[in-house]
Structure formats: structure tokens, C-alpha cells
Length: 246
Image (cartoon, rainbow, N blue to C red; front, side):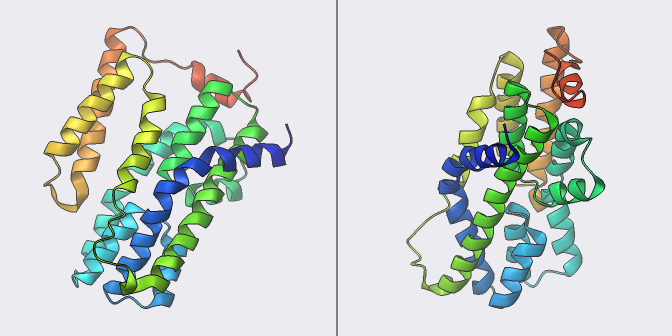
């Protein structure tokens, strides 16, 4: 396939999930304006930070006049999961140029990661296909996020208080989760991580998210070890040899 076809495939794969991303972005824009951030700074923050949940958490802390150290620390903690994403997706992108890797890291999101690694694992396309598919998903999310944030900034306080849009956010992540639950280890991992995400929710700075993810990974690896399925290097071998292996 051509680069254009792969890029369009990425756009199409991501399109259904925009139903959840649009209200998420609008909420972020509305919240930024309502806590006193100027419209220009709100849009600039969205472009520079482009961090979804971490961006929303930082805006909330800014609205509470929290020290800048607390704002930055919270954003870092919320985004710690991207270290796991990076370690997981890196083998697929190892042959990119340095500039491409930097740009890929900037546009990395939960949705782009989940869609791309699922596509890579199922179809093992060649390296060029991976690159353009990933960029298709990532750019669809980036553009939608920026446009949604601008809409939220323009709407500002005009959004009715009774119009709750938050419900779309967890639905989006659930739509990503269920297709990758293949086999007992992934199902157990999801259940354990979900359980600990609930009971650790009171932890400050959204640390419960990181704790739950770590426990879920540990349990999943343990189950795979007991099943004799860990470590599995086939996927990485396929990634690093250009997807030419069976």
C-alpha cells in the first residue's frame, strides 16, 4: 500500500473514537477559560502540552492557585503511563529518524498507542506502513483535540451547567479496551488494574492510575509466566525485522 493509503487507514481507524474525544477537548477548553486562563494561553497550552488528562488536571490546579511545582509534578505523574506506552511501541518505531521519533513522541496519546499496537500485532505491516498508520491516528487526534479545545474556549461559560459531556470519556477508553482483551492474562490484567484503580482513587495527584497500572502489569506478567507464555519475543522480532517474519 502507498503511504497515503496507510495514513488514511489510520485516520479511518481513529474516526469512531472522536465521539469521545470531541467532548473531552471541549470540556478542557471550557474549563481553562472558566478558571481564568486567557483564551490565547488556553489554546497555546493545548498546542504545546497536548496532554489530555494531564492538561485538564493542570488547568484545575491552576484554577486553585496551586504552586507551579505542584502543577508540573501532577502533570508528570498523570503522564507516567506514557513511559510504558513508549517502551511498548518503541520496537515498532526503532528505524525512524531522530526527528520522526521526537515528533512521534509529541503526538503519542492513549488512543493512538492502543490503535497502532493492535494494528501492528494483528497485521504486521512493513515499517513504512506502521509509520504512516501511526501518523494517521495521531494526527486525527491532534487536530480534533486542537479544534475541540478552541470550540470550548469560544463557548466558555456559555455551556449549560446541566449539559454533562464527561460520560463520553470513559466510554472511549472502554471501546479501546475490549478489542485487546485476548486470552486469560489480558482479561485478568484488566480486572485487577480496574479493581485497584477504584480503590486507589483517593490517592493524591492521580497516583492511583500509576499504581493500578503497575499492579495490573505485574499480575499479567505473573499469569503469563505460570502459563509458560513469558517472555514472548515474537512480536518484537516482527517489529524489528520490518514485519517480514511470519
